[in-house]
Length: 132
Image 1 (cartoon, helix red, strand yellow):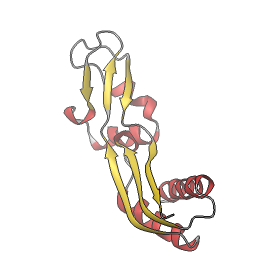
Image 2 (cartoon, helix red, strand yellow):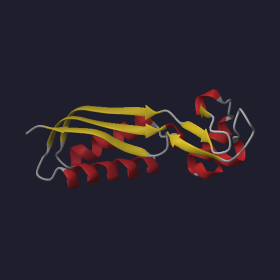
Image 3 (cartoon, helix red, strand yellow):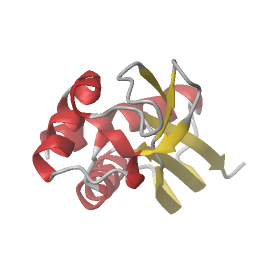
């Protein structure tokens, strides 16, 4: 919960700094990278509480997941993390230290562990629509 609360604080600070003197929004959409394994329910609760404490109202707060896509640097093959059958403890390790993914995952086509994360890492503010 501490992790999600800290993310919520950062998101609210982003909104406040980019939309000063605006305290009413039609919509705010946040994308959560699949590799982050963020608890959407806790993040949503945290965001609502912090926004309320800052006297900021949001009609529609949307939390969506950005699917993790990986690309092999050796053969160029792309695949989705969801295609792999990873154990829960491996997913948790990747959540805390995404760089360890290279220890557990290899390219399904050529077997290389040299890959990059194309999408699905991090937290992004996708859209902010204020009332003007």
